[in-house]
Length: 437
Image (cartoon, rainbow, N blue to C red; front, side, top):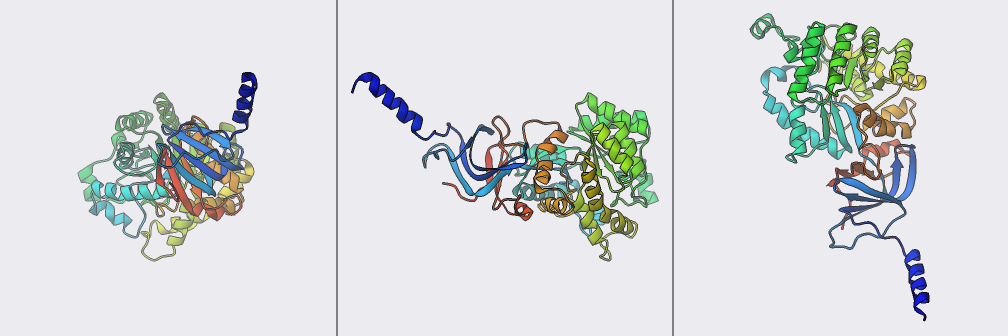
């Protein structure tokens, strides 16, 4: 055979041969893959991972790396792959129980820290590779321990101590008797309690000093605080604006806990990034949120949980119980109205109110209230990343973080599939693995 003909034959054979997977740390064969940008489910994809990032996503199944080689092969052909989920509202340092209100007086911070280690691992194993912790002094330290590889857990965006007003939802001295209050003195901006524009700026700067990633304010009363009102406004608009302006100087975004209408209006007009809970959200507030591009993080799970627990004698103090019964029961209905109105929605559970690791049940409640499954999944992936202000997660694409999970079934066909997570990878490291060789 002439040399030129041989070269042509070799070129044709190379063209027809199956493409080889690029050199990688891991190769995943996904039976289905959720495209979080389009909300569509794609069939038969190969995902290659290198240095903690997605190196490539290819149609079909590229050849698996040889057994015993450097690259790890994960057979997920019977599974559905998705970007790792983000829960935008958790409290990793606590978990609700009938003893919660007394434990603050009996336990030390180190006790809550040890508990948080277990909560973090449960959350990661449930498919949540990132969380935004909105209030708790444990979370910045837990974040650092996870980043150092000392414990297993999701990537944490930590608020640290929430910012409140005197007597507000996050005033740490609520419920103290007069002797304790006298001994401790009134809390101030260092403790996250403000009463002026100047205090507001100082409180944000203290959160910066403490190493927070995001700012959380309690714009109205709350359900579980030891106080009578669950929805009264607790900041003036100029105080919220001062918080947001100062936060912007440090590259922070601001999340606002809010149940009452007036408090929500002030928070939206003050420039917060997101409204959390939003129980009594009115049509006017919905219009304002759409106008300002304010996100809604509904936390339906927490609402349902506290409404159920309010029926149990002794679970909540009597000052809390009526708030839990009335406010908690309304959140899912508010979510349904906000979704129909076109308010931008992202995923959050307020986990820590309920048991950590049960976060994915929020998907079921979102779908039950009228949101299509694909949009609920987007709320916990691309939309959550947008709320955080990051562009390297929430999608399975080349160059993005290798945060990948796999379910036993397709959640677009049955949303309860989200409760059966079989595979978890965060930053290219496998934490839960069904079948490997």
